[in-house]
Length: 376
Ligand SMILES: *Cc1c(COP(=O)(O)O)cnc(C)c1O
Image (cartoon, protein in one colour):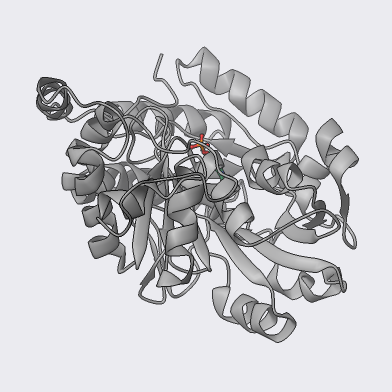
């Protein structure tokens, strides 16, 4: 069976994790965490970067830092992973789901303004498949209505929009290093801050509400509990694993890109014949080969396609059940306007196997199985 995903592993992780263990200091913010922070701030031009235990936790930090609270509304796509929503539910906010664009599966920038009310506090954008939303108009809307933009860049590591890296498009950028993402530490994530205004507050929230970071910098002579916080920092063992991958992140993404391009060259002709749909990469967007998906005609065809692929030893998967139709989504939010594309498009989408190290022979098998389904 060609698996849908395999956790990325380069081989160098072992030596770094051994080094971390030799140092006998495995708690958070150790030497490897510092190396990761330096790498991330430099690579993304961020004012500060913080490793977290997950992207979900990076989003929780962003929601706290943005001051989202009870009575506030947050606009987000219904077509996303539940973590995008969880962070704001935890703060007592109401979710306002908006429709997506059928071409990119991203939040439709033209439908945001209709969802804004006097209670709107933030817009959570999701870089689906490592492809940015139309951020220029979204930024204009956010500025005009004084809204914070939280960027769920869980899938966006290494991609860009008009020359700007994903993760740096909003006021808070959140990456995931879960094992299903391009760069991984098993479970983990990062929060990027484009400017310094929230740096100290972020340090405090991440360290149980203490000013421990100031203490380590020698700015205060003892550390104390100064505000609400949680424990969002990962062990240095995880950071050691991650650092090995960050060092070769371009190679990892280039390897995935070869598979992505192989799929695209083979399957785009089927799209041109009207048999299926393939991803759209808008002008100005450079993606990171996080995902290759195809879209079947409808739910029935997708179910048959997934079964056909399975019979041909190919594990293909679909996602997401739109949040507004999930039990928690109904409880915590509402859909703004008409669900023109969210449900319909989500029922058509199938993700093909894509991971670091997937061989050309295997991607050829996947392509053959898709072609045979469409008798192409
Ligand atoms: C993977 C993912 C998350 C969650 O990431 P974790 O690191 O597992 O918390 C959030 N949002 C999106 C869009 C994702 O793809």
